[in-house]
Length: 157
Image 1: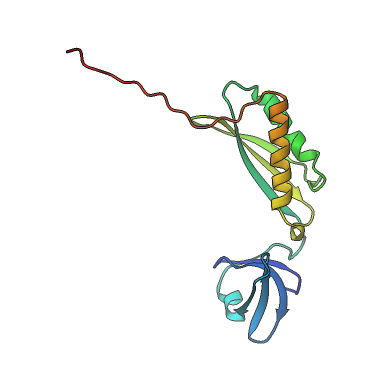
Image 2: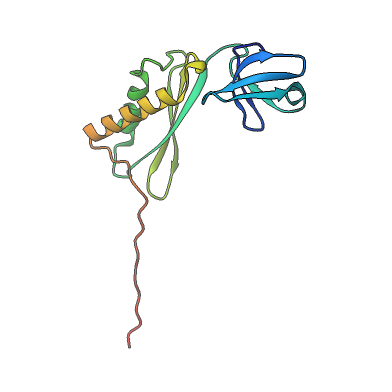
């Protein structure tokens, strides 16, 4: 682990290594909070180093479409939204999987990679989600919301 690495500790601390010392490591979170973490925590707990050997990071988006939608076309639009985003890595290419037939929707899972996770994952995720929204609106692909049918039975008196 080196200064500048993006790390995540099992206790929920997530941020950049800013300084290492004999007793503690200084981690700066994304909201600017600095935490002095005892070095023992890095030895005895699970630590994810997001940038140890490379800075790439994967982004996941779960999205549902209506059962009335053309699911092959919806999948194409989802992949287009990712591949058109400048932060989306070309290698590996985005992947979109049909994951389940749920109560109110047919659910897809989109995976795409960003080349440098230290620049963040939320912004490209948000950008791709907005692009999917626009493409779905433009092509009348509905994102459903949960609905229930209620049947009222009465006894004949």
